[in-house]
Length: 198
Image (cartoon, rainbow, N blue to C red; front, side, top):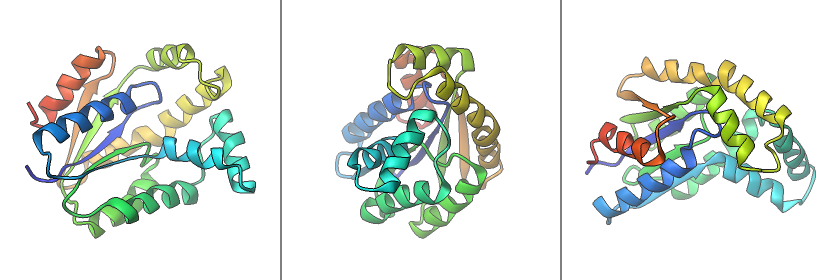
């Protein structure tokens, strides 16, 4: 099996984290000798905020709860550090939480080129806003207030959806449109089919 680079894109509540965990397990079973690097920026932002070491951590904590988009420099710093420490051309790379904007996608291009990762699969978890809104409301997370949910869905619509179209025009990139309304297992099966892992 060749090393895979898989970027998960979808609004919060579309199940990206769950699907990455399941894909990680399949890759471990099918290609046990190859390392898997899983980079999820949302998790890294929450870990940063939990440090409570200074202004940066405190401010990230406050803005995480409000649902606003974190600044580009911090996002790039977090995923860039993870890539620097863990990624090489031979590992499987699973990405969630970035790129969030076309601008960030262009920065990521430089990293993918650096690590010789030309073939990229995009898993677009296409999930209607009313569905992810209900999911976020039901999971009872501190940052899932009505205001933050509304803000996140708005910037996803305006900033992140164009990223999918950006990738449709990128050479050596395949965008797989997956129906995020299906059950967890059905979505998982669709992803395995898309990535030729059945």
